[in-house]
Image 1 (cartoon, chains in turn purple, green):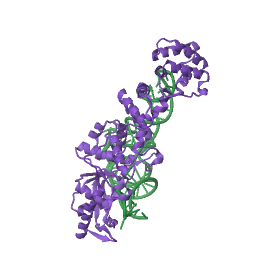
Image 2 (spheres, rainbow, N blue to C red):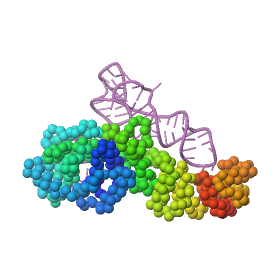
Image 3 (cartoon, rainbow, N blue to C red):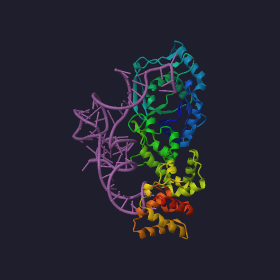
Image 4 (tube, rainbow, N blue to C red):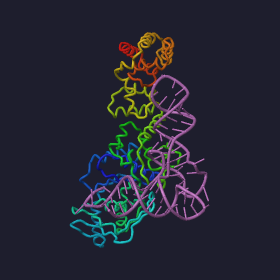
Length: 414
RNA sequence: GCCCCCAUCGACUAGCGGUCCAGGUCGCGGCCCUUUCAAGGCCGUAGCACGGGUUCGAAUCCCGUUGGGGGCACCA
């Protein structure tokens, strides 16, 4: 995996790395992380840490310490000088250019594209070392592939046109050619390259939006790859055992946020309540909510089946943690119900969901109201919204005192 | 402009010449369940870009057209 340390990790890049990782893990190979920082001017120190952290979050790991392209500048320079000596490269305005073949074709069998050919006559001699002595990516990268014994280069298809140059460089230094696999880009919903205006594009943004790492792993794997025509939900281990480069599609895939949401809901619901609570508390902490973990834990069972992203929790269950402002319009016609509820809920011996439900249903019956119309004002009074977790459980959790006070307050508005 | 690549429901895809009047998943629509919202269950909607070939037979192979993407740096 060879990111350039220029900024946050784009979701498309993560997908490409995911394919590298799945392949390496399945084959029992090594997955190497190489930071391509030959262009020192663009280097952002923090970006490297960012990249590592982002990859770690989704569970993609690498073997050994990351290497930095810049550390091998001298080796690259020596290699270039050797090529000049051999007549395979030449100086030009202080820079060094590599001599590409003048005729014939450079071709390779791409694992996802099949055979790709370029007419050599079409290819210009590329600069491989700048006049200031720094090697160019297109030179350093294939050399490092050779030096590191890279067997498989799995990267974005924007590198297809770099490949013939890199192949010829590897041949010139007498190295073994790696197997190339160029995976397609990811598009936004309009079929254009995924960008900011489509929504989240950095992996960190998805994390902040309340997506689970297992969702991202599963979803991203399915963008351009499928084990068969049926399976959509796969664990990390299943992904590893079923992945195959040959089945990676050669056409670009669109990123579908709706399907992502669905899948995240599935994973959220699958979690044990302990795990669910843990993730919820963690997410809230990471995103600036200083809410009582104990209370969060008690509300978790009420929301687990209801929300698709952890970020929906504050809006959905926030009424447990602070004051609410019910909309009088939504309380309309509920005066009788509210008044009756206040008296009855103040008197029932056991303040648990079951008793609360029985009591409220009794009132509704007495008033000749359908449950639907009867419970709405209560719901609005207690949760501040027409949409909420289960009403009776919510009331129980809130406690008699707080519930009654909210119902009383609402009654004065209705 | 030149080079390279891509093309199955709205989306992700299965399909690698007959088992496909094209299957799965998301979305969407309807119904059921129901205290709201979800979840869940059932049913449904919708596609082989177009035109030529090849073949007894094409979504599958070939050519062209159209459309889309990427690349053409002393960036990566």
